[in-house]
Length: 300
Image 1 (cartoon, rainbow, N blue to C red):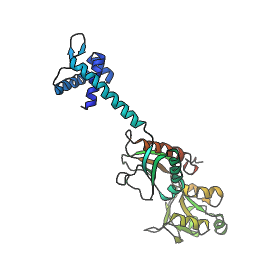
Image 2: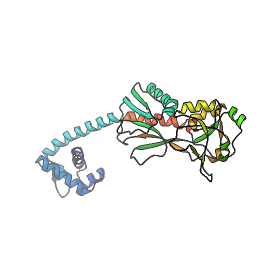
Image 3: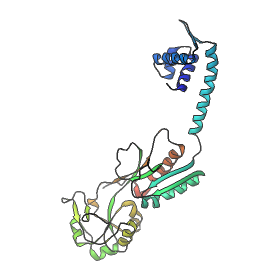
Image 4: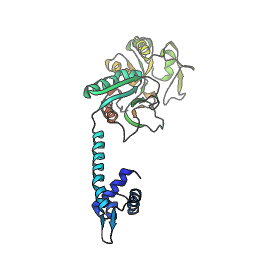
């Protein structure tokens, strides 16, 4: 048994003058309280409590220990409360996907630094899902279905994969009404190891192979090409939200979009996390959940 817990049981017995009442106060069984007292007396080699048929009373050694035990427990409580209420300070390591991090996480980080003058943040932008433990990451933004990793996850929104094109491209090539119509169009694609295809929901063939003269592994390059009218592209909704609102892009084939993809904040641990981590989680979650770009979309 933990030594502090042992002292707490002893203090409870002295203050309640009863094993049963002490057990009730400490939410333990009476036998467990009796064993703890016996173990403490055996370890110290002195009798601490005189037992009579009517009540319990501390011996001289028990009274001396009681005073010291109260001091130790009070100091421990003060120390732990101080830790829980400590100011937010120190270095936080935060990871996020590149584009999402640049657009949405970086502004949150700078606002957090302004709100907590003793804090520091290292922001790591990488489209690879980094291991929080191996890379000493405190908080990570993760877009996608999560593995059962034992990490604490907080859902803050969702995104969709959208097909978009510029108004100029659609004026010259027409608006595709179904996935089958893409055969007569041109796409701007990422770089695939296999034949380039797009997946469609509620479409009998599921996948459609599409022609593309331009392929790039860089999202910004593909987006710029689509904005210039070089073809139809597929992007996550947050990547094109501003362009759709401004009318620079048009959303296509909405009836065939796949299910939304969740956006999470991940962190290690739980109840015993450092105050800086919980402070950033709350700070970031509130701001991410207010973003129109990842807000849950009502389907008609």
